[in-house]
Length: 188
Image 1 (tube, helix red, strand yellow):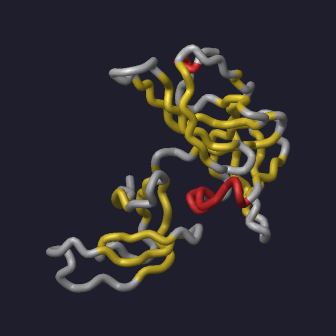
Image 2 (cartoon, one colour; image 1 turned 60 degrees about the horizontal axis):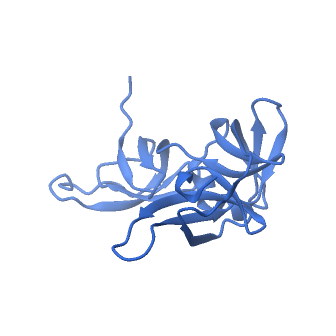
């Protein structure tokens, strides 16, 4: 495929490794030829690189399956155990590849996984998750007037900042992009 056809989310077989495209930008400078600026994440190590590719440059797309997977649990070593929902195989994902993303996952949660040669190389989190607050300090009287934030710990161990009126046991919605509090989960 040509460099101009590269889009976010596809995988490339580049320089002997599999890279998932995180961001692309097509640049047409006033002087010189147009090029594509590509930010990629290594599927095995999680490292990032940025490359500038000529518009006509050929790159090879890696064949990756996007499958429904279920998060089962985290091993004491920190590795995550997932189940492929098509084959029911249990797959292990290293803690280095998961990073802090594992803190947004509750057991039995369904997400998308990128699978290359039978191994999960990346997971796709939803834009937000719902968690229960398990630990926080009591609210301060009159805190509704000011926009004060306090520390809280969620059921998975994720540490976030929440408004002062949030109590232990409440369900909140959290952004997986930056870990920000988005709001309370309304009970139906």
